[in-house]
Structure formats: structure tokens, C-alpha cells
Image (cartoon, rainbow, N blue to C red):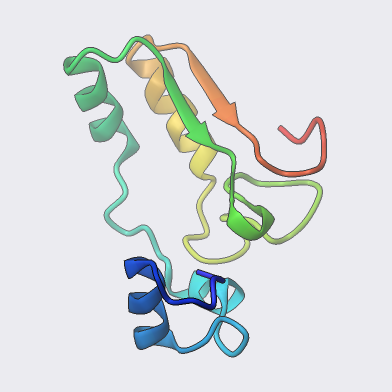
Length: 113
């Protein structure tokens, strides 16, 4: 998204649709994300049916956007965008399917979940 060379297809698409990230960045795009068709129960059941033995979810998106009800910041999926605790949804769906659940955290802070 932030590469200036425009060599990546997703970068060209994003800039064509929204403009340069310095003018309309992730902080703006995230408000359009509603996740209205997100169905973790259906998805995790599908993953198990095709052989998954565990399920991991991304705890934070780029720009340190937390996908749970973070006590560390309000830049989260509960406060902005879909207004849903995505990690709780994934965790519950994995539990129902009897799959071990984990999160992948790419933020600089420790002990976030």
C-alpha cells in the first residue's frame, strides 16, 4: 500500500480507487470495512472439514490495528470499522469445532492479548 513505485497490482488498484495513502490511508479506509458477511462459524467449519487441525487468526492488522477489544488502544475492530471483536469470533468458532486456537501478533508491544 505504501510503496511509491506502483509495481504491485494491489498498490495500483488501491491508489486508483482511493488516491495516495498520504491523502487517504488505512486510517480512512478502515471506516468502510463493515465485515457484514463475515461468518467465522461457517469458515472454521469449512477449514476443519478440509483437514485443518488448528486455527490461527491475525491479532492485529497493518498499522497496528487490533482485531479485538484492546485495552491498550481504541484503534481496534471493536471501536472502528466492523465494530466487532474479530478474535473473539474466531476463538469461539474454533472452540465449537474442537480446534486449538492461536493468534499471530505482529505489533511491537508485548503481552497484548
